[in-house]
Length: 262
Image (spheres, one colour):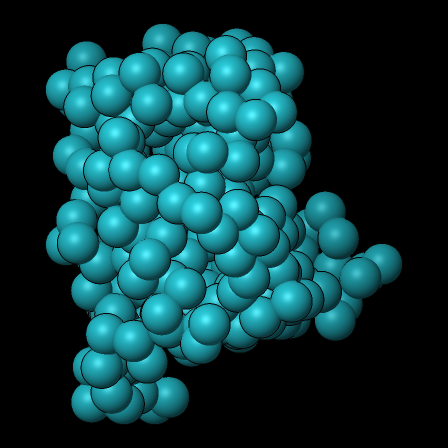
């Protein structure tokens, strides 16, 4: 079965909970994909939780739009290099209104926040999803773009703080943090700052990297993410990155919420 055919078949299966398939060893490249029938043969309760609780309830909760739930889920899958569910979720994200150029920028952004290799693993999946949906170069971001406006005062404060803490010991990291991350990557216009922050926060929680969660969650809320949306994003993440990672993040998020102006 060609890759694009496997992707479409899997998407149709996941969209129809009652569907069954005889091909319980379908392949996407060298990666096996799972059907509901496969899951039932191994863990009937897990299949029931997937359909009734995760897809039937969590994804339909108010407070966070389906588009944003897709962004959160993609960030988690990419950050953890969990490719087996990527074809379904990249297709679902497109159906939920995430644009191809936004998916491209999510992957590019996460190369810096989740690692180059994890971003490349996502590229290997998305190239075939894009091909199956006839996504061409004209729908993707350019390399050179007109950057978004920058808050010079806030950026100067951030750069000064990092320079004072780490400049003498790690000048290369400090330089690239300023020049590449905050004066280039974060200013790319094809992913809104609010969505870029949502991706970053999701990736940090997904990988248990709570040390930077306070500044990035504050930045997300400065960029327009509401407390309700942040709470629902963390609820969504519980099912995709584990309860322990979410419980590690919740005290930090609670503290951020409490210290924000009403």
